[in-house]
Amino acid sequence: MHHPLEDVQDYADSCIRCGLCARTDCGNFSNGEPNLGELCESILNGEETWDYAPFTCALCNRCTINCPVDLRASRANKPLRALLLKQKPELRPLYRKFRTDLKHNIFSSLRARNDGDITNVVYVQGDPDLGGEADHTAFFPGCALYAYAPELTGKVSQWLRDERIAACTLVICCGATFYDVGFYDEFDAYRERVQAFLRERGIKRLVVACPHCAHILPQLVQGTGIDIVRLPDLLVEHGMASDSEETLTFHDACYDRSAGVFGNAARALFGKADIKAMPHEKRDSLCCGGGGMVSVYAPDYCVYRRNQRLAEIDEVAADRVLSTCFSCVNSLQRGIGSTPVQHYLEQIFDCPVDWGEVYAGVDALFADPAYEELCASDELTLID
Ligand code: SF4
Ligand code: SF4
Image (cartoon, rainbow, N blue to C red; front, side, top):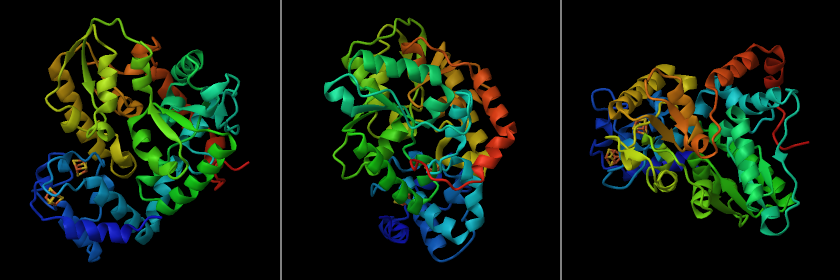
């Protein structure tokens, strides 16, 4: 159960207004204001001066990595979004196609259309026929990977079966796409459906590919006892490695900035490569521009952040930049940089994604009247 009002009040009370966060060059603070405590206070007081700011925030938490009282920007801006979404219901339809708690959304429709029938939304692939723990383990690739890179997803799924780690693959969302926007009640209802779905299938372990999913999944499966293991750790443990001798640089995902676990394991897979550091990486990584669903509300903020990141990537003069987050790859790919961008799994499984083909598929989906019609429905995910 979420209590956004209490969370925002707690934030406003805990922040000492030192102003450190507001010195960040992410585009969300003009002239060094508002700091996050002021932002909370202002919205709690019903003021409109900065009420756009929670929605233009990438939730990347870079501004609060050195917060003296250990606050995190996302802990202010997510509940602020939840409050504002209730006050401004006209914002809700903006995010409809990313409501992955609804059966027909951009990711499920893209996947279904590519498979030949836009109405046929599948939630699970593969049968529990391996025996042992693998039959209770599922691969959780995350929306962007399964929708934009079905072939790569298939290769990883097959590897997990070959290694007798996971028998099936779940083609469902962790809920971040709407939870992060502030659809808290919808997330609570979705969690109940996901948990019932996992229980029915006897799932006890999830292999997660995406740092953002890894951040949200503990909330989604809270109380079920389901273990979450990271795919890059399994790849390292099972001796997977790249032969690449290129000069590489890594773009670290926002949701991996504190722990660095995805980034460290992915780097370990490229032992023969020359890995160059970026000025801002790991804990201090810059956002790819795609964070926080800002593209829906204020695309200019995304473009600004993406360009900032791409400029830094190009300065490193690497042969390639790799990321552990497929959404980051998608965002960086859309900009005009000169360094090729890939997900590290594309290299490990020798399965490059053709982004021209991906975007042609997305354009065809948007032009399909059946998609608009399906997205007009409120049918829920995981209900037959
Ligand atoms: S850095 Fe932390 S304490 Fe300082 S203004 Fe920002 S949120 Fe408040
Ligand atoms: S975009 Fe990132 S750095 Fe900027 S306010 Fe949001 S969390 Fe902080």
